[in-house]
Amino acid sequence: MKNQSLLRWVSLALAIFIILVQSHAATQTQPILDNLTIESFINRTLQWRRSSTHHPLKSHGNLKLSTSSVVAGVLSFVAASISSAGGVGGGGLFIPILTIVGSLDLKTATSFSAFMVTGGSIANVMYNLQAKSSKFGGKTLIDYDIALLSEPCMLLGVSVGVVCNLVLPEWLITIMFAIFLVWSTIKTCRNGVMFWKMESDRNLGARNGYENLETGKSGEVKSVEEPLVSMEGKETPRFPWKKLVILIMVWFSFLIIYLIRGNRYGQGVIPLKPCGIGYWSLSLFQIPLAIAFTAWILRRQEPIACRGPNNRGVNKLIFPLMALMAGGLGGLFGIGGAMLISPLLLQLGVAPEITAATCSFLVFFSSTMSAFQYLLLGMDHIGTALIFSVICFAASLLGLVVVQKAIKQFGRASLIVFSVGTVMALSVILMTSFGALDVWDDYSSGNYMGFKLPC
Image (cartoon, rainbow, N blue to C red; front, top):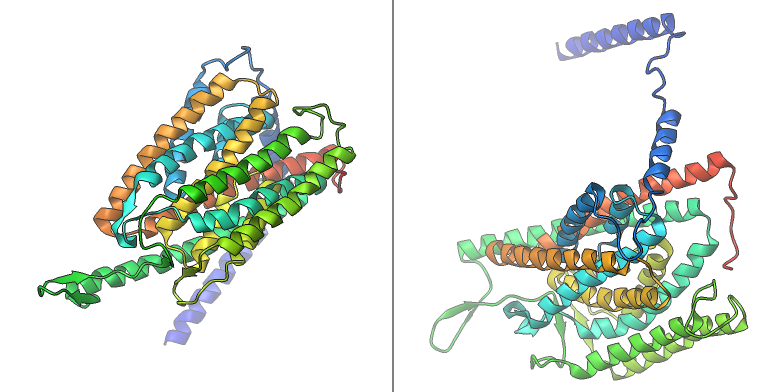
């Protein structure tokens, strides 16, 4: 009987399909969707984007207050509050908001984004420096060891990525960005689901009395939580001033090179021929500088043991290599490296709280360097950029407070992971869509779409 009923439904479906095909053939000469074809839709979208991004900046120091700027500020506030929870800069959201809603050109939006990410990262660092976690023995959430091992190679990777961005064609960058960020989003969401299940099992065990317990001398029972990250030689929760000084020294070393070298248009502190021998010599000097800093830090570094789901130790060389890849991809795609290094740290088994705090700490150094470069090389509309950075500062503080309260109340650190996944997914949709539109615009206009010289 079941087979007969299934045959009836299949026959009915085939009959309906044949009728639809015949009716379509009879009216084939008439347009189905009039002029709303895919090509016309793309062309209209491109026309709207060109018209929206060519509004002049009408004042010398600031942008005029308008509805679009207010809406852009509100959306930036929401984006910063979401990004701050995951410790990522949020540049993948700020740039589309400023270009689409704020009607800014890409160059101005990029400079604004550097200030906005800086404002959010300052809020993150201020919060995480004073925050102590009882789960991790009263230490701060920032892992200075991982930051030390990552910063030199991350800054080097950003420079390499920027050069690759100039050489590679737009269509290849868009495809690489979409593939890598989709992969990172899937990995991050999987890690979030894994942490969520672990937290559910732990909370269920705590309610049923099956959680790991330790009995004290007086007979009382206290719970013991195994952190996902432990660092040997860190029993005393003192502030690591020496490590902070080294991080600042690395930052200043790369900043001096950037300022002396300038950009490929010859804009720098000293007159230097654009893309000449001096330019490339200073650029290549970053390689031995990063290697020297990393080797010195590896020699003096304390052992790092990351215990994740597999309970395996992690080789210290993984962190500089991971930072080099994240910085290179961040410079190539024009986004912060934290959005790329965060899923890699989670994959290694680093706890979500430490991942978010450490990534925001790294973002602070990279974003402040970008902001200083824009300032010293003659950035326009500094006042408006500072207003947007203050907005992101307040939004980041609000987002951090809300998420930390939710973690304490529900015991769900996986909320941080899902926050990172949300930012990544939105960045994939926005930046990939408009990158594809730019590629289509170049193709339809007959522009050159091959590999280019860096100068």
